[in-house]
Amino acid sequence: MNLKDFFDALDGTWPAASYRRLGPVTLREGQGGGSRVSAATIDGAFTPADLDAAEAAMRAMGQKPVFQLRPGQQALDETLAARGYAVLDPVNLYACPVALLCDVPLPRVTVLSVWEPLALMLELWAEGGIGPARIAVMERVKGPKTALLGRHNDKPAGCAFVAIHNGIAMVHAIEVLPTQRRAGMGRWFMRAAALWAQKHGAHTVALMCTKANVAANGLYSSLNMTVVGEYHYRHLPTETPK
Image (cartoon, helix red, strand yellow):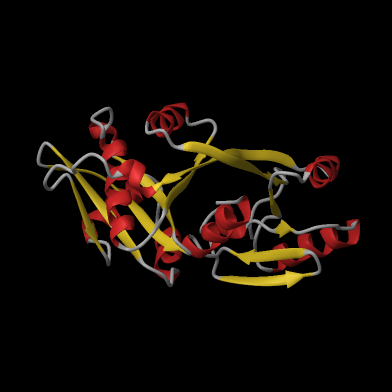
């Protein structure tokens, strides 16, 4: 899997409400779904006028100007920094073969797979800040997808979302209740995602994790997932969405 495949799968499994090309810029309409579906990306060469136009277009959508910076975009990164853009949420990109996470049987009723999400799952996500705008992102996915409900000691433990694009199963929106943490639920979510993905023909499991989340990075490394790349955002901290 190359990085283009990864970013294509990101758009396919966590899609913006709409996409529009503006010169070298791809604009995303996020409708409140967060930076991942709102950030503009730039392919190839760009000019200050391209950045001006992208900023104006994002503001016209009622969005704060945010750009996603991918590997090899140092010139863009430096240009945005000079325009007052601050770094936001550096992210590690993890991936591994599906089979790597399918070697341990899933204990019965530890993780249930269902689509549409149950009302309980919506409540669990909402407690973690994953509200209707991000649920709408899940609903927009066209390919195979599922929601995972975790249980521990006969009680709800959390939930996650998985979708497949071109053979890559991406895991999003993992949320474990504070009272159920340190019980291995994140590990079971990843194994459940892989088992579901295997049944639906995926060859790779992938996800994004902010570098600041030390515990989660440790979990994915312990599962022998590999950091295949990284990205970060730049935003104007003085601006807020309309």
